[in-house]
Structures are given as C-alpha cells and as structure tokens.
Amino acid sequence: MSNIKKIKVGLLGLGRVAEHHKKYLKNNKYLKVVSCCDQDTQKLKIYSKFFKIKDFHKSINSFSKSKNFDLAIISTPSGFHSSHSGILLKNKKHVLVEKPASLRPNDHLKLSKYAKNKNLFYDVILQNRYNKAIVFLKKILDKKILGKILKINIRVNWSRNQAYYNDKWHGKWSLDGGVICQQAYHHIDILSNFFPSIKEIYAKKFNLSHKLQAEDTFIANCILEKNIVLNFEATTAIKPHDVEANVIVFGNKGFVEVGGVGMNKILNFHLNNNKDYNVKRYNQNFSTGYGVNHLKLFNEVGKKIINKNYKSIFNPKEIEQIIINIHNFYKASESKKIIKYKKNNIYKNLGINVKF
Ligand SMILES: NC(=O)c1ccc[n+]([C@@H]2O[C@H](COP(=O)([O-])OP(=O)(O)OC[C@H]3O[C@@H](n4cnc5c(N)ncnc54)[C@H](O)[C@@H]3O)[C@@H](O)[C@H]2O)c1
Image (cartoon, rainbow, N blue to C red; front, side, top):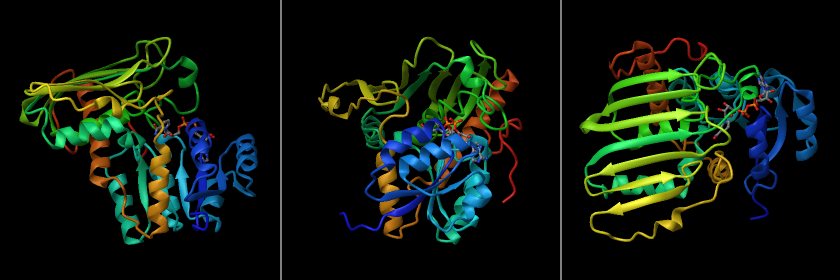
C-alpha cells in the first residue's frame, strides 16, 4: 500500500468544512494535498504549514493554472460551486465539489457532460450517502420491505446563530439560499432520490429567529407519485444546539425511522412480521451534522482516479433532481397555493447565472 502513487490534490476554499476535510486528508492513503487557495492570507499560512506545502494561491485564476495538482476539492461558498468547477475542469483538473453542486438547474448536467467528454472526474460531496443507516434505508426501500409506502416525515431541527448569517454569503439568495439549500440539502437528496417523484407541493418559508435574505425555517406538504404523503420541515431557528435530522417512512408492512443529528441512527424499525434485523449495527456516532463519512468518499474518489475510472460516483441526474426540487419548493412557498411540480420551475432569486 505504501508505494501507491497518490493523487495530488489542491484545496479551494479553506473555511469551516475544509477544517473538517483536513483531518481525513492529512495522511490519506490515496490523496496528497500539495496546493491550496483562499482569499484569506491567514488561512493560506495555516494550511501551508499543516500540509507542508509551498504552492498556495490567493485567486482561483493562478490556482487553476498550477501544474502541481490533478484533483481540486472545492469548498467555497455554494453560489460559486458551478463557476469554480467549470474553471477547474477547463484547466484539466478533476473536481470534487462540496454540496450543493450548483444552485441553478442544468449547471451540474452541463459540467458532467463536459467532464465526461474530457475524461475528467467530476462529482459532488454527499457524504451522508455512506452513512450505514442511509445504506440500510436504501436497501429496505429497494427490497420493498416496508410494503406500499404511505407516508414520509422529514424533520431537520438544527441550530445556527445570527453571527453565522452575518458573513458575506450565508443566507444570501445569490450565494446560498436558506435552510433547504444548505442544512437540509442532504435530506432533500434522500427525498429526491429514494422515493417516487413529487407531484404537488404546498410550502411556506419563515424567518423565526434570524435576519437573512432567505429563510431559516421551511415547511412543505407534498403528494408524491403513488399518492405518498410527505410532511417536510427544516429549521436552523431552534436553540441551543442541533437536535435531529430524521427521515421516517411508514409503509403498510411497517415503518423505519432514521435519526440522530445527521441521519446516522436507526431509531425505529418495526415490521408486521416482527422479524429482527439487528438494526443497532447500522448506528454510527456523529458529534456534528458533518458526520464521519467524508473519509469514505475521499478514499473512493482517490481509488477511482488512480485506476483512471473517471465515472462519477453519484448519478448526475440524481444530483440535478435535488436542485430541481429545491427550486420547486421555493416556487411553492411564493405562491401561497398548492402548485404542481414542474421540472422547469425556476426560483429566479436563487443562484447566479453562469455561462459555460
Ligand atoms: N458536506 C457537508 O455536509 C457540508 C457541510 C458544511 C458545508 N458544506 C459546504 O461547503 C461550502 C463551504 O462552507 P463553509 O461552511 O466551509 O464556508 P466558509 O465561509 O467557512 O468557508 C468558505 C471559504 O471560501 C473562501 N472563499 C470565498 N470565496 C473565494 C474565492 N473566490 N476564491 C477562494 N476562496 C474563496 C473563504 O475565504 C472561506 O475561507 C458550502 O458550499 C457548504 O454548502 C458542506
């Protein structure tokens, strides 16, 4: 293992989530950080020292032209993700971008197509897909163990303070959006990709605790295909700390509740036939909503690129569906009526137009 030729990595954006990445990248088996970029000189100093590197940049223009690295990991504010991914792909870098892949529909599909044509790896960080509880949920849904799905409840009860929203980008329409684009993005991924499509939406957004352009609280009631009823709520307004991020699925043969602060535990699993699945083995301890599974994703990306397998891990159409559903939720929250889901429902405030 020690003579594996590691993939050389450049980090773009050295904020909170990069701090979380750091510990998984320091002695990673497949990836070696050799370059970094941030507008903040202090952060450049800290990261250069931590990774013992000499190639650091204050702007994406010089960073993207660096010959030192092959894979860029992007952790800049959400609204920059698609433009930054585009710049790096055009400079022949493989790209792994933090979620959300884009704030506008179509950007991710366009970039995926470009990357495929150029033989480059391009994907988004959905670390929660690796949670044991989520893998179990997917398995029982695929095997239809709960029978006919009747009803789904999704609840994200997290806590942020006003200082979090007072920076240059959090809660701003152009660069972030509100709780459904940021904290509940992973839950909208599960909703969008594990269950039948949304048909109708009634939604409302609120600012219960904070001042921000977008919302700190969002509620929605939806009817999905097959007449499944969905109750969705997400907030950052509660105090004093993050409480839960739960997905509860009720079928006509039983129900499952995935919970914990980051969808990391099976809190309930009950079937008509009383069969015991020993679900405790799927529980993982998370101290924060970031979870622990960035490492698994980094390792898989590293192995794929080493093996010159540039196919994305996540299906680009699934990633696209997340942002389409977020736009539909916002459209519904504006209309004060039940709206029909449409693939081309666009909420104009969200994101920045980028030409590729
Ligand atoms: N996977 C997850 O669960 C998860 C968790 C948290 C955050 N995120 C995502 O990570 C991204 C970053 O979030 P964060 O909390 O780390 O934000 P942050 O504000 O703490 O960090 C962003 C960093 O990017 C730098 N930056 C901004 N514009 C830049 C530019 N043009 N060029 C170079 N550097 C630039 C800033 O100086 C800052 O250091 C967001 O898109 C967020 O959605 C994902």
